[in-house]
Structure formats: C-alpha cells, structure tokens
Length: 333
Image (cartoon, rainbow, N blue to C red; front, side):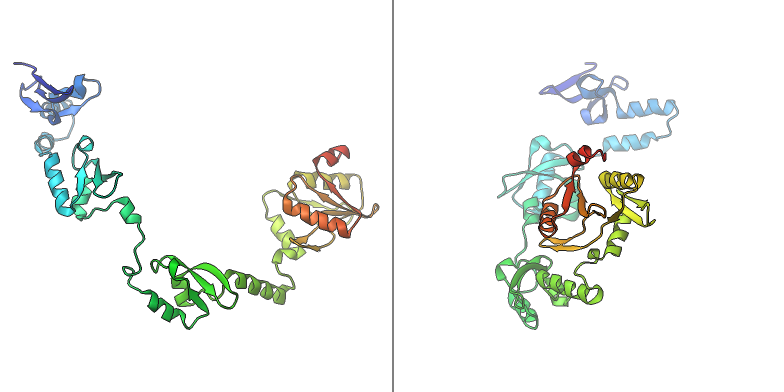
C-alpha cells in the first residue's frame, strides 16, 4: 500500500517515503513544521540525494550513517542510569534521545530536575540540586572543631561552635579584646590576615588617620574634599568674581546660586568653615559677608543633612537653608 502512514495518538510513528517507497520510522525523516504530522515526505537519504544534485557538498554517506544510528530506548537509558545510581527514574514523557534534556526524579525528593543523560553517562555521577547545595558537615571537611580550637588558642579569638560547617565558609568568632561577635573567614584567621574585629579595625583606622592628618576621615580635610568633588560627575568649577579662587559646586542649585552671586558682585565665602556634629563634620555651603549669614543650598534634604543643619543652626543663629521653594522666592533659579 503506497504512502502508508502509521500514527499513535496523532503522532507519526512510521511512513512510506514518497521517492524510494521504503517504509521507515519517523526518525528517518527530517522534521518540518510545514508538512503534515511534523515530518517531511521524503526520507533523509533521498532528500540528501536531491541536495547533492543542487550542488550541496555534504556527502550522502554522512546522512546515511546518521539515519542508521541506533536511538537509545527509554528502557536502555533507564537501565544505564540505574547502574550509576539507584532510586532515579526518568519521566517518560520528557525523554526523546539521550543527548537531549529530560526530567528525572530522585527517590526522597519531590521535585524533578533536568539533565542530559549523555553527560551523566560520561561522568558516571548524578546528584539532585538540593543534595549538591547541602552544606557538608565538619566531619567531611577534613578538619575537626578541636583542631580549629587548638589553632585559634594562640589568638584572641574564640570559635562559636554552632556556626562552623566547613573550612571554606565563614564562621562566627568572639573577639575577647572588644567582646564583639562577628563573621569571618576561618582561613583568614588561621593565616593571621584578620587581626581585629570590625569595631577595633575602625578605631585603629581613626587613630592612624589622626596621627597622620589630624582628622578621623581624609574627607574632613578641605583640600582633599575639594579634590574628590572635582572628580565627581556632577561637579562644576566656577571662579570667584573677586578672589579668582576655584569654587567646586555640586548639582544645579549650587551652580546657579554661585553664578547669580558672581553676576551681582555679592561678596561671599564658599564653604567657609568646618563644624563637628553628632553624625559627622559639616561644611556650610557659603557665608554672605555683608549680611553675616551662613547659607546651605539643598535640593533633596536627607535625614543626615537635616541633623547636621539643625545642630549647626543651634550653634549659629544666622543660618538659612535655601531649598527649591526659597530659591524660587528669591528669584535665584
């Protein structure tokens, strides 16, 4: 019977080639979404001959070899997988060929995961993702808690046992000098690269900065602060109309105010003083000499800036904040 087609659940199993007339399995035909049942009408061998007549250089022998290659059945794949590890089942509906991804389910785990069986057969090893993500116990890590305690006995740190899993992970330790608990790499502790807790590191950093520069933070030095501000993306350098000093302004409001002061020849000092507050040092933006007034130019008022301005205003009564409404009222924008 010519053009015999065998279907199962509306899926092509085998059919006759329209050119050579052989009855072949569906895998012997090229997939084509434009043809009925999703496969072409000519087998791969005949289709390859037609391509060679049109000038294609691909040899027919490769096409024939590819079509004659045996497809690994689901039963065979399941058997080989069971030899590697028992308790793993391939979900039949997801399996097509061994070199394509399929879903497998492990005994003891409810969620399946995707694997490529050919890769599993090569490495002969398979684990569930949840199993891979489980942290190994300290018995598997090759180093015991007693050994770690012995190594840390020469230091000022004490191990919090409940935090220890493996050597490569961070652990919680107690710094006996500052009584501070903090997370740290065990390898850094053993090598001696971690010498202090974060609290002590901050204190020692501030002490070093005070010894070298007289301040806790380099940005508290006006020259350093100006240098940093010059390298900022939203900064603009404008010369003072009277002294010629380079004034570094940030954002648009500061720039417009300084340009207005220069145009009207108003005497002012840019960032005249440094004031220490509870949340850090504060530099008011400008000082109006004639009015004897300090001014802060603000677009967005953050909480930290509000605290600084509030404490500065308590110490200096002649202080004013120029925000957007105030600048519009003064016709500075």
